Length: 336
Image (tube, rainbow, N blue to C red; front, side):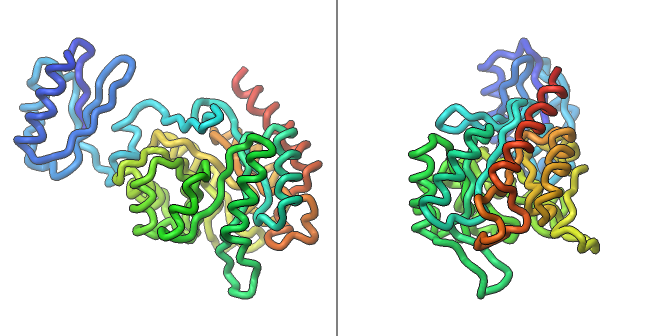
């Protein structure tokens, strides 16, 4: 249930009203203080609440029930966009375009630092790189693990770029203490125990959509993190599994405006994993920006032909530079 209070409602009246609702109806009340109004989000069993009684209060502007099972991620509870701000001032969700770029896997110190410097020069504001790699085949390269994390930190030290990398299980959370954005991969989108533990942190979480997840399931996974107290969630559309096998996945471009209408959380898009083909990254990235994405996460490798993972979908630094220029120009034209 959502209750919108009138602008003239005092803070004392709002506090007393929240206490009354909590005590009388045994519900949790989340308060969102906007520029022009205050919104109360009631979570719990609201079936016994008399809407007419609520609506009769002189400081209540409107009241309505919410059908969606996700509450904290729901735009109705939080009308303004959530903006995630990193330690170096980079903001995701404020209307700007942020690009996360780097290799699928961290392979060596020289490799990750050289790529980090290159993508930064091309306009990327965040460095991506896999230290722990979930692979379909047990015989594929699984990442450098803890050493990979250390190399990402060295690249951050050399460039100043915040880092985003994927976590595999809850026992690794302490290892990710100095990571700027923790990525939850598609295979772990419904690893609810991991999501619960990440909800106890205050780290930004990049939550990728599951291979066959519906939009509601995706938002419910975000709800798990937010229910634990961590509201710093970034949603990532990375393509879903369909009957089409020309591409690695099928990028659901329609999910971008749909999710942004349903939720206040920022949305980024991964055209690399969606397509699995380097030549498709540019058009899919352009489509994502045109559809309202807050950011992109793009794989870049200095030698894709010899990459230890996902070389076929990786851009060279030169290709990324060209694509990034086009993306920023498109974003500028959309804002003009």
